[in-house]
Length: 121
View 1 (cartoon, rainbow, N blue to C red):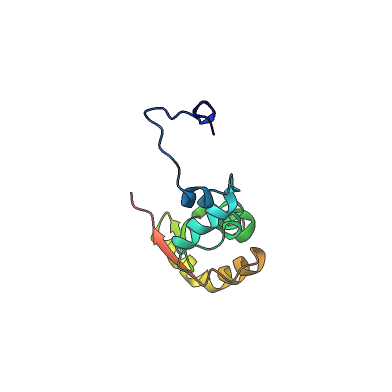
View 2 (cartoon, rainbow, N blue to C red):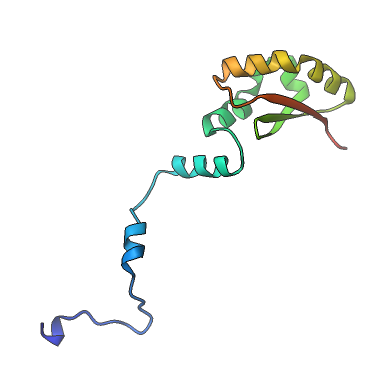
């Protein structure tokens, strides 16, 4: 092959290894990455997280939604924040019923427990 047909390398060019080319399969959908991150964080699947946080009022009703806020889901535990101890007691008393409702309406068994915390400040 004549030297004029060989592509010239510029001073900053670094040749890519075969490993790199095999690793890169082109653009990927974001959904798969989100699922891997959630799994790494011990969180449920993205659709469950979205259902709980986006549709909270439809899952638990308007009155409860006005006084509670889901804050996180970790290792199957849904953490709720409430404004005062009275609501904390009420939510702890209702937690089994709420759990059944969430399991049914969000169509998931990934949430196995509800813990209630009083908001600070």
